[in-house]
Image (cartoon, rainbow, N blue to C red):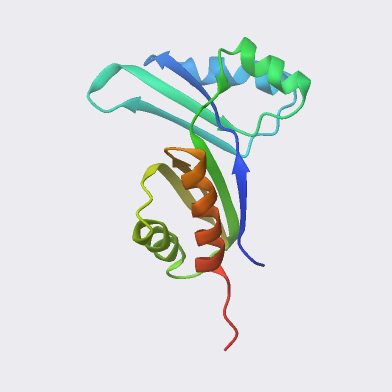
Length: 145
């Protein structure tokens, strides 16, 4: 299967770094039947008291209302969701294509489960995300031998 690249909206919330904050944030979404593909939660480096929770997707009125109830809001960070079959060197190919073009990533979260690759890339602006999407598609296209 080819690698797909899609624009994504990450919903985000800053929280106090305390036990149970992630569960409390996810509860309304769970009750609303939201089917999340990505959940990221982390403490700010050097900031022991603050943390962030980010997730995707929030789709539909019921899930959006639940996300807002949980204190989440759409992030202004331009984001791409990249998914497909994993293969050796895939992450490097993406990083090299984007880096060689002089595009700075705001964040990346990538993983492989089984044989499937999935990553979320954040960029400083929409123009960089659009350019990166084209570069990622080109860098990950399987070449005929």
